[in-house]
Amino acid sequence: MSRSLLFFMLSYFFGLGAIAQPKEIKFSELESAVASKPKPVVIFLHTDWCSYCSLMERKTLKDQQVVHKLNNDFYYISFNAERDETITYRGKEYSLKKLGINAKQHELAKELAQSNAYPAMIFLNENLEVLYRHFAYVKPNDMYQLLKAIKPTSNDT
Image (cartoon, rainbow, N blue to C red):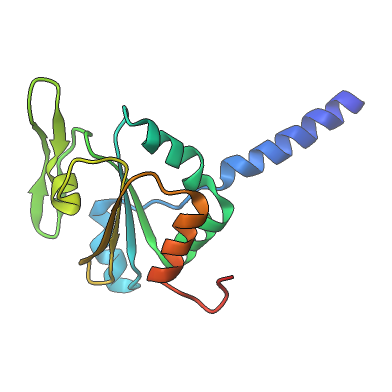
């Protein structure tokens, strides 16, 4: 009996942590979403090989306060800057381009970040104009403060 109770409790608590993640939207949905309900946009640019990107996904973007703020006040896009897909955004097509023998970068990531440094957080206003670019790992509390600065609400603490 006690083993099953312990298992249930562990499953419950670990399960809650797995639920805490930002709701994502795709670039293809962004323009119509912003047109119907204007909100700022947060774009997390990352790659598979970037250890700080991975750390941000595990820590910062799983933080309960950050997730709550992102889900309520922003549209959120997680975008792998080396993903091989064609994206139509704001009337233009973007695709992955080779930069050298082993290097590649998505044209949309390059246009948004104007760099190839990762991780990158790109903040857009309701008109899809770049407000701010941040290139480096962002700790959970720092990310929350950034989000509050961009979109303050009366219930922010």
